[in-house]
Image 1 (cartoon, helix red, strand yellow):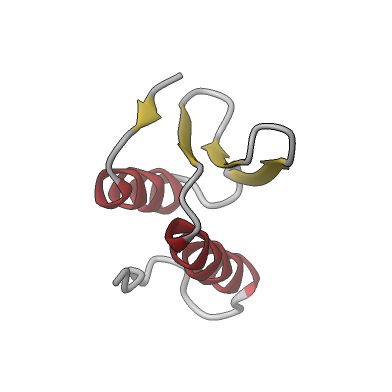
Image 2 (cartoon, rainbow, N blue to C red; image 1 turned 90 degrees about the horizontal axis):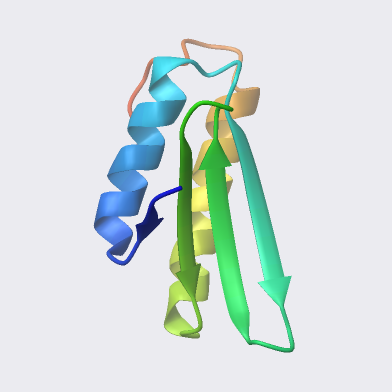
Length: 86
């Protein structure tokens, strides 16, 4: 399970994984208060991508990316449209 250190690399890999097969991808957010870590995991049961942070400024990035993925997952129009990650 690759742990990404760079946010941009993680978002590119997660987007590519989602666009490859949208029906199999799952996204999990986990926060551990005792460690102060926020973890986002994107998996399709074959590949598993993981990004972990303890920085407060990364929470907004993760929240924005997670909401973009959720919008793509529930969209009725074409799901092959690429996401805009900032």
